[in-house]
Image (cartoon, rainbow, N blue to C red):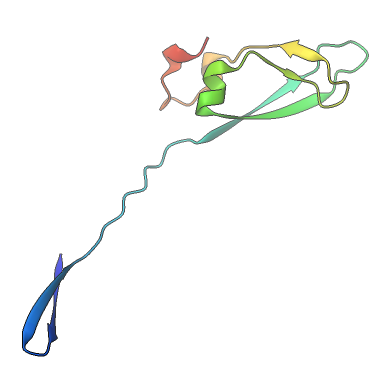
Length: 86
């Protein structure tokens, strides 16, 4: 869409700028429990798309022990390439 303005005796045309913002999922959140019997702390983990593809576990927020973990296909948004999740 163009708009006409007149400056002096010269007509100038301005193009209207349009922006496009894709509506993609940028972040997922998962809940996990620590595997340590004496801890069992609930951990909320936020992952970007890139982090989700590399996700292999987490450090417990309470006892700081490492917990091996993987994402399930159902935890990944359909818009992401699910084949890349291991």
